[in-house]
Image 1 (cartoon, rainbow, N blue to C red):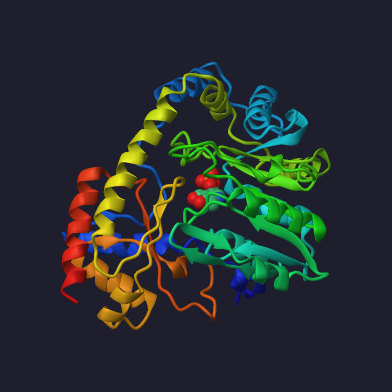
Image 2: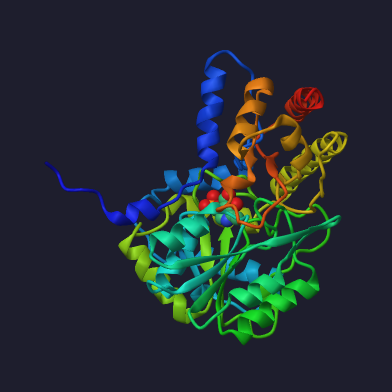
Length: 400
Ligand code: PLP
């Protein structure tokens, strides 16, 4: 008989949004209509100029291995973009190209965390943080958010209480998945000072930095004392609708980038060669495609938010960034007499075809939580489906 799988696997989580997909597909296979608000994928094509540049590169034979750090021209292009947008001075030595944004999380943890080290991470938050910390034998210490009429703010008291001599890393996701929340200037300053005071490394997950419907985004790396302790998770996935291309980068101090590079050699060898030429075009070529993606998302957000706001028992803050809405639905949950988040989600799906994630899909639910939340992603659903789906939802919930 073969021996058992590793014990570590028991600590590995997943993106449970994919489990909602499975449920939704099963429901659809029985001839039912589905309204997909659950996955953070984008049903908008990658801008054609990006596709074209990658295709040319492929036809020109740019199909072999490249340095694990990425091709120099793309590293330069990323360094320029980040330097200009975040008002810092970076060069290609601060950039390691990656197959997407997600690998930056694992590699950052591998570079810094020893078993038993504590990592502060947002909860609700992107579920891969918790999964990777625990899989790699660290202690995942969640910090949460307070809700206000005009959004969410980081629970600073809880953060202060959670830090100790074993804390080494703070994961910070401004323009946040799933809540769409963003830090005020004061909050970001507070987080930077907190990291400096406690001598923490910071992973700044900036996956949604360029999904802004108005105003100018801010990065924690721009604040005094942060450039030497921060690694940015950068990705092409959202801004340029390139989720399936797998192109991103780790951006940070040279001292840590050399270890990222070594991890890349050991892991994927290099990021896909010809796709990196598409990345250069995305950053330096015509920006009409990216603008059009943003305009489409904005229209979807506005329609979805205006329809959701009319639903009795639902409280909504409308974020200026990301492509998520995170309404509070406690009253509806109670009216349904739902026995769990899963019960609430499934009953709604089976009665309306509307698929969404719940708070439970974004890190373990904390003991003191009393309010219930769900997440709508509007990146993978067209306006007519949004309208139809929310009408179904509203109808069902109003009868409870
Ligand atoms: N970080 C956050 C907060 C995300 O929401 C996502 C994807 O949904 C990622 C990182 C990973 O991005 P990528 O698709 O580039 O790996």
